[in-house]
Length: 329
Image 1 (cartoon, rainbow, N blue to C red):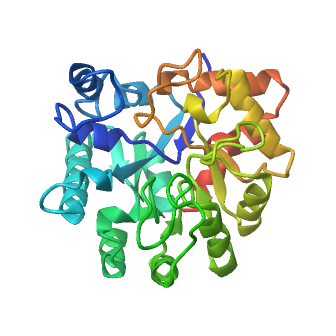
Image 2: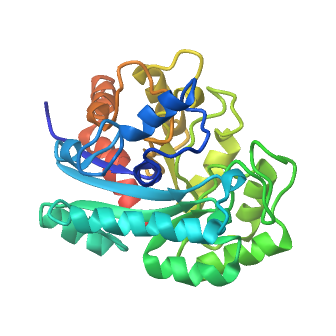
């Protein structure tokens, strides 16, 4: 099988690595034993039974991955979300150190290019939900220094910055939320809108001076889930020079989650001059169900093949699977 490039805007693999064997109640199994098995499949980044590992990453001509730091604020530990964020960051650093022969932590596009040129994979940091930094504008500089390049103001839980597309969806950015976005932009961190309320999205569009990112969202026209983007939202992101990462989670593909139907989401966005906007954002290790025919990152080439069979040129496929995301950095 032909080696393809793969640069992905979102995964939850670091969370799963940290939470192996956790007693936290989750939705990824019918009972606690099934949940433990789910997390035990992702013990470390090098090789595991989850969706992503570095052994499988070597199948790609070049591989880049945004690793999200994520934790549900509803399960905040006794020492607080910031302490949990630091634990997640420590886990990421540990995995980078343990696997420095295969992967490099990169902060810029130039560092990504250098990693690839040296035969290594590229890891970039993001934060999924500002609750992890306690919605504290003063901590943005700290996480920017860590190398965080994407930050979601919210996850599914509404917070002081904004409502989400699943909780308090009519509420947009607060004054504190707007100030938070301004500081993110000052620190060269892109706002990720994949969980933001529709009102928050348009508030952001009216104030942003930077490209907007939806790291893992599909088309609402094809799958009417509020986590997906309307056509107008896609056009707005496109017009800022941002990117939209295609989400592999079955719930956001539609009633019949197949690779072909995932490709339909891509094609829909491509009809709106999205050739420089669409990228990959699989949500791997953060979702229970992938489309039929996908078990993990090893099956990403099937998406490339499906597009290739439809007659899309190699230059466009290179953009979708690598260049569009890379150019932001």
